[in-house]
Image (cartoon, rainbow, N blue to C red):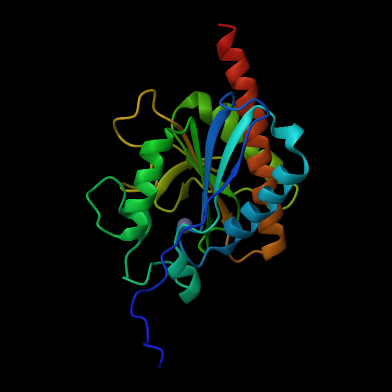
Length: 231
Ligand SMILES: [Zn+2]
């Protein structure tokens, strides 16, 4: 039988779960990469973090980590920021989008009820690492240490304005609408952090900087939870 050419592009989004030592007793973090199909560093870093989680489960004994290394599979296949339908998927969340990737990811976000959401990106207009986070506490205790960890591999973007937003030492406290985030109705709201590498820097350095930043975020988040529990 002759093969019929498929018109349905493959929108399958892989998900890898690393479970805590005691089932159900872990801080639940979703790690999302590649929502922009041409930002490979986050995808490669996530693959490295998946290996780390498999090889050193004791380092993550109190975490339940959900890895989504490729959130925009058609964009990755095409090498484009946007998906095959020409949309920036990172502007489509929680506004009634019918894109299959968004329907799947919104379903995941709603069902999993993450304590924390880490999104990985790279920016070809930035010459250093930076990030987005809400609130002074998280900015000081999570993003700042993450940027310090990444500086071993790549500089920090020190510009007062990054991507059109006011920034302070690589930290932006505003953001775009429609980005991958916890459901608006979720209470307590998830911790959300976006980490960006300079896309024109060597890929190896971007991957290492991202891995170091995520590991530091996880370590600092653990401290923050222990501190909050003692209040
Ligand atoms: Zn991006």
